[in-house]
Image (tube, rainbow, N blue to C red; front, top):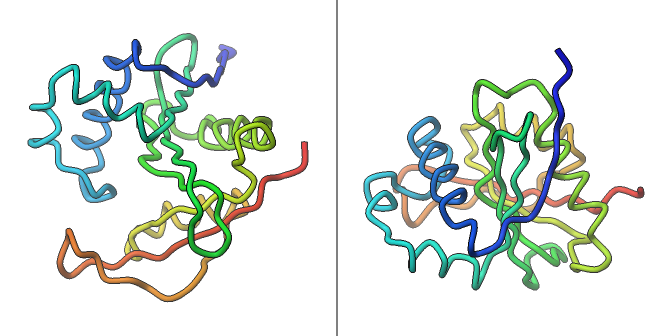
Length: 166
């Protein structure tokens, strides 16, 4: 069966999609994120909509089913980053289809108009699967490991990627 994959930016009126994907990511991969399921499940509509004031959200769909998500924040960041990527997650039933690659292809296609030319992100140092996935997408480790202030005993590493030529 051929899968139809699409990527789009969601907007505040799509807050339920954001909520559902975020909560699913926190349930399935709690240790990969800085957030907490028990706290975030209590957020109301206005709190979910408020997230769109600071962040932009991309969703990848497989056969019109929400299957992956990432957030992007425009900022002047470490190592020349013009944006910071976060909350990257792919639903386990859709892993292996290249959804994260498709999300970053969307970033590359829209880098000029959105100032997403140099992407930065942070990843837990013990998350080798994510680190290797980001390396395969063209990210490079940058700087030293940094101890987490929210999760004592954990450290993260920053990674940087320049947009790929389309």
